[in-house]
Image 1 (cartoon, one colour):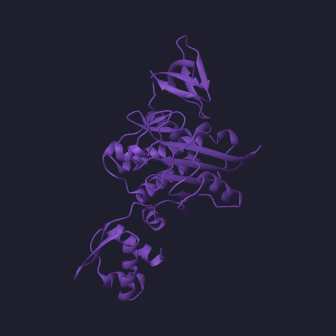
Image 2 (cartoon, helix red, strand yellow):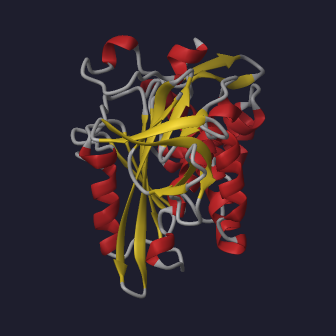
Image 3 (tube, one colour):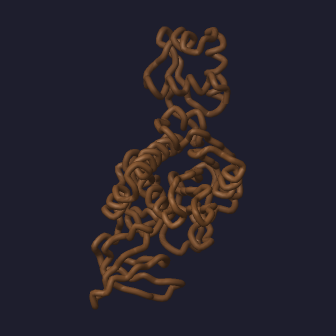
Length: 325
């Protein structure tokens, strides 16, 4: 997309009204004929733009795709999204971001894709990644923390996605330890962080984020380990993918900035308030076998699950699947 066309989109988003060709011409520093050509290019790209004599142009609807210029139009961050990379299709945005980070990509670099052929979840599970419906995103971070503190960033991602869902829909998501988001008990988003580190510090961390936005029932695989859903299925309304992406990145930026300034405490508190197991009885299983039961009382500073069993023993659990009973 031509940068001038991106500027037109930003103006449409900001003013949400008919904008005269003369005003667009003045803002872009081009002729009225050039404005018309950019409007035509946007229409050819799938944007519905109304034209009314004496009033000008107005954006009516956008294509169901993630457009970098639209993401930038909504972006209001200081660090996350400093560099945006968009791919129509890829094996894995995490793998792409990892390679970019190894090559020196700046902190805040974001890799987005319309589809993935090798999306991964926790413990190597497959993350279904069809085109045209969801968010597949990976973010490069270079925090000045020790490697054992890196798991804290997963919880930052979870809170950022939860906030974005609340800001773009009327839904209230819950977070399931350690890295899933649920709506009505069904999985709507998952997170997968990967790290490159030395003994005394972190080189970089990749935050992998997948959110089911406009996925329909027949697009989910038949062999899911747990029930899954999308924001469309739960709300009955489609989600603007570019706007959701930018809002999620904005929230991630705020949380990460706060984390660097004040540590894990604030995000840990919000995460626990949003957790579906907060204060409830749970059973933690590993490989399908029930291991430990007790009352969920929170997470430790390294992200480990804390639960107190009936005999008043405090357990720290670093892996497994949590089931609320």
